[in-house]
Image 1 (cartoon, rainbow, N blue to C red):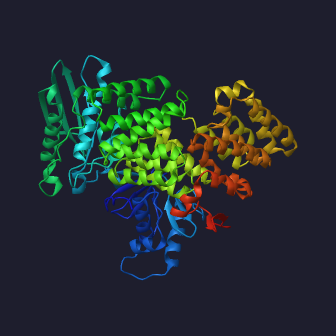
Image 2: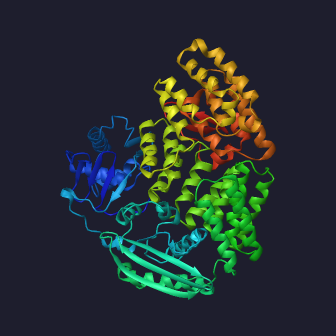
Image 3: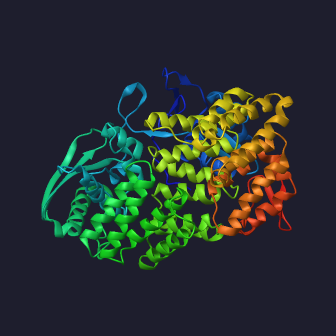
Length: 628
């Protein structure tokens, strides 16, 4: 279960704001009070403290009625009252979802607010919040913009050191660096990260010298409460990072409850400062924007230079493994590169078995090979080693849990990622996709709107998600136009636009079905196999064929996909996730589905961790649980 939040917090979700300490729910738009019983407010408080977690009824009853024996019907009445008050309907689609036979789940985005109270008075931070710190990227004061990576590297290493201090909460790099380059008040950043302090600073390097200035900022007032400048030789960089971490911990010590100190770098990450700088440059390329072929190529080349200086640099091996995998995904290297990427991940783990990022890269590569059990173990190990890193939860959900059909578990991991890093674009996109997969389109749209709030550039899957939602409510023309925005250029050049419009016309009017199926066949055969069998065309064509009743055509695509996997031992895991769409139930009920999933190696995973949502295993076969 997720880390407990404050008992007196203020939580925002949808158009509502919950003041937990006052047991008060209001509308954010006009401050109007929403009438609810005390027990209903207690239940709501517990739900928003654990967003996305599947809470069984016994857990909720124990939280709302501690040390009291009550009937389950009491909880049912409370949940019904909450749904009425939130306008959520009896089934719960936007806020409180029922997972049949398992419990309840609060599905909407939740933001904990630390400076809001009824009447506008600021809420006082609890003492526990003062034992938490977010580390922002350090500003590079060098005249060379190419050296911006260095300030990021300083901050990242401080996160690594401070996270090892007992009792100190430190959000991961992915969380705090999501605010880089965004003009946001530090108090808002602190609220969204859930911390009482922020560390910001600057770094200037010239020749053999380095000047580092750090400031500690109070999250409630926004004022600097400590500042210090360090002038050192560049050769003493690792010692300087230790010294700065020690100074910060000393300043925070009164809030930690007991004397503490950082676990210093007995063994720096590399014996070569030049190798370290090259590694930081490669990291900056990864985080600086879209992963283009050119940027990935420069990442690989930079990491090779780093490893030439220190072949035992575990972090560089792990990052190079990831970069090689990305080159395969983007089509610039052949499938044999996967073996090289795997060797890099294994080399990193041999050098540092507790490097969480290496376990995550290893899990990603294993999942791409269909090694589901091994990938599950790798992601679990990555999360255990670094439970504050949102990317590990997100990768677990995308590369394993979604493809094997465990969508509720995938959504829970996605939500853990989102609430660790609410400004991380990938988490919002992924959650939108998962809620779309299970047909909760209103919740999906809430997460897609988060992207607008973040000012994120257009995300490729979003038009597909919205197209599926429009089609499900019968807006076929709109669904077709939305889908056109997701088509690769090669598909457009092959006449794909007319074919897609015809397919959606046929979904609206069965008289066009035969012509639509024929047009889809012609389009699919004209496409380069890499386009036809890759994302998103493979799953889109399969989906269209199923909806149009052309099951043999759908299974022809599926057989090509699995034959490619058996030959190359390479999967597009994202392509597997939509197999669990409600729209594809006819595909899953076809007798050929059993062989299809067996050839993908999914059966052993299901035996170990349980079958897909809505299914049971009987004598080694999937059996649909009707009404689930």
